[in-house]
Length: 349
Image: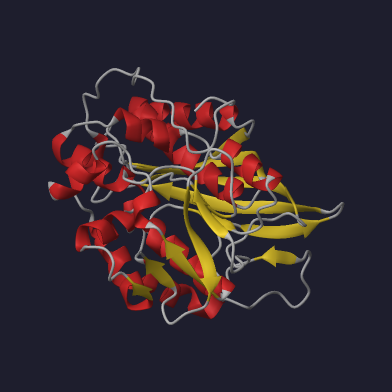
């Protein structure tokens, strides 16, 4: 996506790197954000860590772990806040350079989802050094550096370990106006719901892992920064939002509506999808992460208006997905609205 493109518009360019001789996805049990710990399990793990803090804090924590937001925000002098996040995962594509680009864009997305600007990142690399050539690791890092530089973000080193599976990501620090933070607990009834990237990355990546067939449109979507969407959201006065990654649209929307005390209504017919996503689903390329997402949300959702396939697509585990925003954003389709809390936290119609 060029710097002048609008939210929701994916510019597809040919993949310029040579075909991978080594298929990185075959060295990992999962791929991308689909390899996240299931949301229900994760919430149980961190339950005892919320609403706690040091007795004498050095700074005010504006956004923490309580509602599972995209990043932490700490207030610093001058009305600004530091945005801090980290994200890493196993290969979602076979090409090392492209993997690095996707992982970096995904890590930077958490800062954009909070309405912030990435300032500096450090690399996180796990590499099976006795199995995969170190030259491939260098390509992963090169891809990450390129995307960080596109974002105007420094890369100041990092940390690496010898790991049985290849993993890569970044810890990112950004800046945000603390009075304009976009957070997942601020959605208000009567507000439209916008989505800035199409869904379908998960099923297309599952197909690629199984068959080697690459979706250039999916790669273009995953490597596109959410910078322009974030800026457009801030300009439109949006104060509630999140990004759509491993828990799928339904999972992240459930967290957002639950934290805000409202119900989210999704117009299934308005949700955009990448080319080939429905065909990949019909062919059975559905990750375990996607099925776990749907299982987690189902008890809190009214899915009676759609069939199981449509529900799976809405729960599809995305990698470096778009922003899900409470408000209208130029160039992004409106896919639903927030209404006063009902029996179901999420309703699909």
